[in-house]
Image 1 (cartoon, helix red, strand yellow):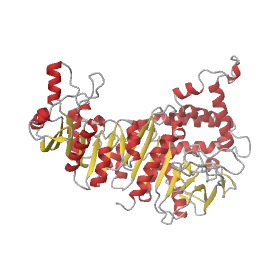
Image 2 (cartoon, rainbow over the protein chains, first blue to last red):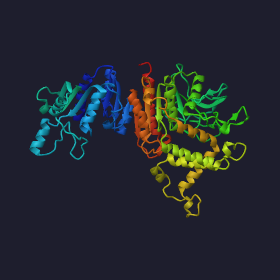
Image 3 (tube, rainbow over the protein chains, first blue to last red):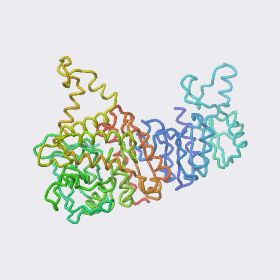
Length: 198
Length: 376
């Protein structure tokens, strides 16, 4: 499955960005694939937040600590710098209050890792330009009427945003499916992963 | 996975504390007897003990059958070989609460100074006092650290109280469908129950032990309780507007199924419960506040305890927001926490009925807590 390959590549990239034995908060952790990987490979002290009840059961079955709730309201109780790292992988585009969550994530985590699909990937551009249809691509697989995504942004949009808000981008990695992209990422990559901090 | 089995015949044991216990009020209560049951075996390291804490109307008989009886303990679906609290792995303990009427010292016990039941001479007790008694039992069983403390509703309050009083004595905690403190609505329902008992002419200011007991008052209290334990949907599903025996309405007999059910529940309850215990225990619940002395997150701060909190969607007596308050404190304190709001239509009763979801959550949680040992 194509989507699975993308997941693996971005998980690997995130794995490289996380310090061993650190504490990690994964916002929108789903079934806990990434968190489980981080616990096993990096011995992190992991905590997840996830909205889907069935996903909670799967996380608990893996021995993960996970809270049933939505990310939009889930961060305010945490103390400043409560975690070494806060991860928002493939969940940024689905948040209702992006700025509030981003600010809170940057407050709660010493560092934040953000991964999201690039809306300006050439396949999306082609579909929009030639077919006049909203992009349905490998990293944006949903039709307009069933998408959980509320925000559509490109890699360049995010870089602009960070510059504007004085957020430091410490590292960034780009992929087209499972292949690293080092040239013209905003055109050629369908996923971007950023390590950021205040 | 192993096949779930039932425990078979079990019996209640008694632990006597001749020196009694000192209550939070400063009063001394002596002697004290604690009724308890245990299932499974304590391992050599004494690291597999689980303390089950019962709710308002529960008792020490959490699982298995008593000789000659056909009704199993109140959480039988959860306790036994290959069940959530797997007695092949864990040593499970459940005791009747202080102030109760099922073997542990309470208002119906004999006051040695007067040779009569305490009745209202029994001191006001708190949830914390119940926990003091449980700690004495745990010490008696020479267990230093419990693998977990777990309970629903009032049992959950005792879980929180364990974290407040003896955080070093627990490795993990599982509060279910409970609250840091009662809301005015919860206090109000308890007060209706108490007023029903005290309005019964047979109550006689609590001195009824040598005569007729205030059964009708206690039954009404139980009926009100049962309404709050169900949900609009669960009542609709269970009873609808079904009439009993298909007869038409006749004056004020219990002609709706729901009426018959409540009366049956009320009448049954008085056979096993003491009205004065009901007064004392509900008051203890109303007075409970886990953050009375200091904010609950401060209580948890720095403790290496793991928490699993569970709430149920249709529970309007202990709504999920109250469990979320507990979770918030855990987050603030930086405690590793899992929380699940189980999609159930059973209302507050769900903590006794949704055993499949609870089994999944609890069995995996306990496994991870057990494995964590020594990894710190």
